[in-house]
Image (cartoon, helix red, strand yellow):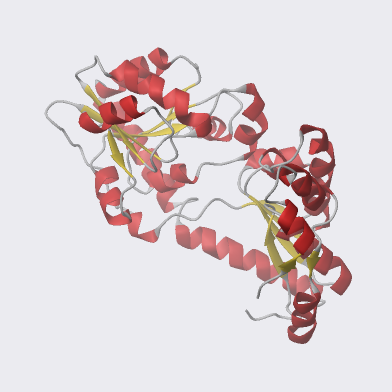
Length: 343
């Protein structure tokens, strides 16, 4: 089903007034024609309305829930007010709207404890981790060597907020022969010269198919998670939870987290002693920590086994899926006065 957006706003969205259009849609009203959607919902009488607090369609879901009296279930994966293409002066408006969406949802599924704490008290707010790919699950850790080199892999976005961190890390490893750094993911916004260098040196392998990615990650000695130290991204780092961390655990490899004290990934690593955590923004400190880990096989085994424990436990895809389904059943049954609802 296609929701028809306001034609005038659509045209203005392709002009220099685009940000103003987003201000209107995000902070006040999206101006979509929702008649077809409303008719569809009324005809089919769903038990729940499910949405993601991202973009502008979540506001429509909120509106339909209120108007039609159907419980709303909302995923909170990112701090949307800091991602929306709006003017700075509208941040307060969209943040309050974001928090109202949280309060008006009968069930909220937060990607991290940091997200739940940032959004505040709620009668039915749960932490639901990202679901990993089932094909990635391994059953044991492996001790591997690559010509004496300790191989560290980062898989993910290398542009925008992580660009400078990863470039600095690459430069730091250039003169270190015993560590092999490999970067996997979409092509970063680096200079042509640097891109040519990382490709020629075998550091950057590009965006590769899932099967090849799985093979590469299984051959690594350690897997790297990076979180930004920039103050302007603090809320995003506190509330988001990197899906790559959940995926990494499936391989039973030591996980290295490089980020500030307050970020969700570091909090997780420290609370459960499940990762090598480096909270210094200086890449030389990360390099030193990795060099030390490379000489500590017992610590490697310990961290690899901790990752595997999480893969079998809280990060197990079947358990996460079951938590999700059970949560939906609970809120649907409650709305029906205890009557059993079958999905």
